[in-house]
Length: 341
Ligand SMILES: NC(=O)C1=CN([C@@H]2O[C@H](COP(=O)(O)OP(=O)(O)OC[C@H]3O[C@@H](n4cnc5c(N)ncnc54)[C@H](O)[C@@H]3O)[C@@H](O)[C@H]2O)C=CC1
Ligand SMILES: NCC(=O)COP(=O)(O)O
Image (cartoon, rainbow, N blue to C red; front, side, top):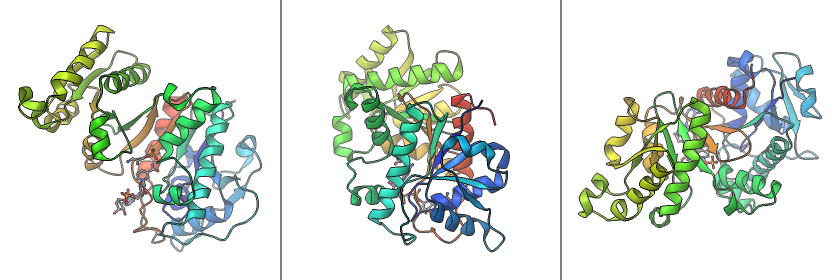
């Protein structure tokens, strides 16, 4: 039997519940066998927003993921992950209770995936300020999932390196560092971090593509340092890491000027670009359209995807949020987990 896919509710003060309900309404076949890990009342509010005055999809509480197939089509199955009822958090602002609820859903789904109960988890966005306000020490899903997976295997987080990949149908980028200041990100451009990023990207994309991926590596500095005129990280750190990766049999190239390497990948020269820090890699993908991008965590012993956007507090409660990126994330989770719809 195909195992179900859990969609975590995200921060209930944001657009998560609304876009999940829209995904159930707009892509019913793809969503078959999916259930929401979260809160029933938050999902009912999301379903009402998604319906925009029409009849909202019904929300059915389930007690276990195994009950998912018994829920009739056209109904949103929700597995409550927190005991008892809480007041609905206000929409569109940072709220510690909402941050806690979002984190509990992710923790529940991570553990269910690690014990093999679900095929994959697709995470609706959470708000990092709300997560911190709730007292959680993780900057985002990526680090939280890394900690859960490492603990499950009896390892430290450092022993289970993970990387963020953002991808759409034209471009993939894998990041050397994620949620740190730009100053720290520059410090994180080390031989080991670049080589580990190449290894993780190579392994994940080899499995996905069925061949060795062509990896283009961005430089850190303008013009990839212009032979040392604008910085020496390319000469002293990035090029040696690429040479080591090539020595391990990877099809890695660069470092290339960061302002043109994405264009080169998009026109087919590389399967993915290794970006030296968060914004270097995410801006090109997001600029191609927030509705297309999917965030995939590489290096975990589970499948996790997510839309490429955040909680969009500015439009929460207006009914204007697009479910396109979430639907794409569910499609990719199905592909990666081999779970047919
Ligand atoms: N996977 C996740 O959990 C992610 C969480 N975040 C978090 O979300 C919070 C807000 O981040 P922002 O930088 O404001 O980015 P954001 O992606 O939430 O919003 C940026 C802009 O895009 C619009 N937008 C986003 N998603 C949309 C959608 N589905 N339909 C229509 N318009 C949409 C928003 O209205 C806003 O104008 C932060 O706490 C951030 O850390 C950000 C990215 C991913
Ligand atoms: N900018 C992407 C982002 O912040 C998503 O982070 P995560 O929650 O997937 O770790």
